[in-house]
Image (cartoon, rainbow, N blue to C red; front, top):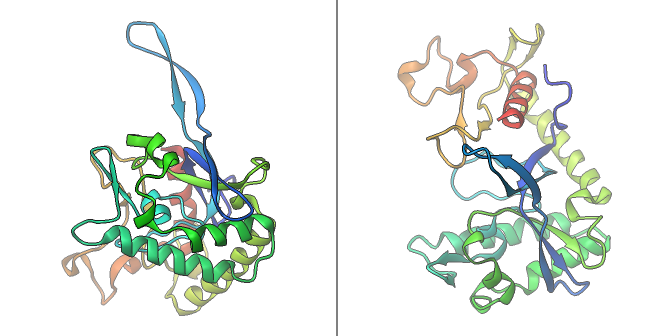
Length: 261
């Protein structure tokens, strides 16, 4: 049943680089934290590949469209810049970069407003100081080059790489409390059904979390259990209320399957 899974309010996320910040919120360096792994090729020769590390971050969003996380890992949200043919630009046809960065800035500044740790303060200063239009020639981003768009990031304080932002106790305690309040509100309004997996009367999951890593699937992940058309619904039930799987079981199977994949 996934007893060893990540806590419900955290998500295991692949991370490639750590953005090191000064006390003033300036980038001092972007450190490659990928791990070397030796793999055997078909010709029986070995080669070294760089694999991302796994970081446990506050629960990642499952919504489509522009939606933000507390502590972002996605470059478009963090930097507000697109990378195209060697050039960084905040411009695109739908203004997604600008909208994503604005969403990230507002949500994270609001959440971190009462946190007092040095890394939290540096993170807020970074958000306040960063202007995408002025950073198109940023040397740290230029050094990343084509790796920029396909990489994920976390944050650290210069001189203290062993204590990244996502491991900050003050942050995690606040997020857990907010997550528990939100989860209780969802449970209180959810349909109660007998969960065939847990064997208990529990709140039913209306929408199931996405599974990432399916070959040929959507890059943001795919829903394994879902009812997107009314033709698949019955007995007056909508969406995944038709499946009768509890929120508890849904969180277990999605987090465990994501980890296995």
